[in-house]
Length: 445
Image (cartoon, rainbow, N blue to C red; front, side, top):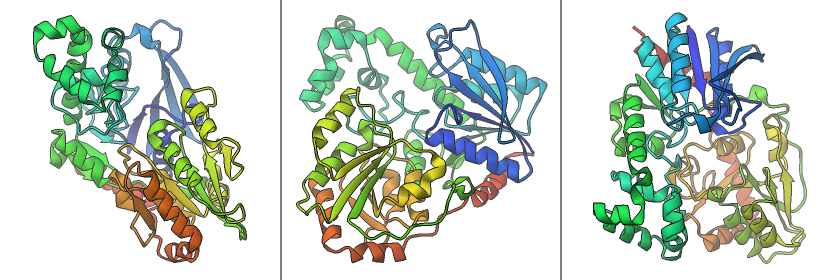
């Protein structure tokens, strides 16, 4: 089967959940004998006129990297005319059997529209909330979770808006009043007079077109793949037809790991964090929970794996929070091939996210490395971690609740052994690819 795999980014230039998923999928399809051609967005700030196209080979994969200057492309966030035009021409003159789009952010909804224009069946893997939320996260500007409002104006208030920021101090006041100011402003802005007076409509029409276009193009897909039941339900509640969305959990490609040997360890109990160090991942909650522990230095450690930007306000906040505590170790970034080595440094993984997670790969990686998990009781995390079986769950953002669980584990370390004995079997990439082939076959006539 000839497949064009379109992605918002691709390793090694971009490393993230969706990008690594695209990489694993492309390699898995290639191993099964399919002709895979990758098309990906590389640089949004490329100082060129029009579209820059660069072709390369990586691990036997044919990759086309597209770059452009986003400041010169109107509507690039949702309907990129440069990418749409390129794909329409390419797919028309060299038609594949199928187009598989992973994510959507950066490459925009124009990718699915181009495939439909060329007559190619389209499958989209949903890795986040791009198609139903302009912020892509379903998190409001005050940090609270969002259930995808029907009102376009509510999205306008949530997005960065120069007039709102300068004239109304919206982000600050909304945060101080815990969202009450936003609700008042939203109600007042139903009036056209007040919208103009407050400056609210500056990007109202843009957001409305954005939301309508992405909903229209995603519904034109032949099939949508949701790696978690939570994500599937969120899209259905946002108005995406239920029959379009199939649940298919991702598989791990352990052939990409450089080791599968777990070393014997005798020493202090090591809690760990692995992933992006950004506010919505909740590392600040974990650090505060850890600092509440009262055990001696002989009993416990916290190892943090991920790139910390100490120049950012969040990075500075974390470093100030940690202070001179030598029990907390920032281990820095790592190559994904070193996953087993990372988990050799962790006895229990903590996933303290305050956002709606999809199907966190880090939890699956932990289970594959025989590492139990303590996670926020929310979204796709709660689907994977079974309390008392493979780890435990705590209420989202509950520092005390997390600290209590950690304290119990330190006092009774045999809990970890019981969890390890009951960790679930993890799906492998070949199993996922076999399921993908069945999905492909169901839509190709």
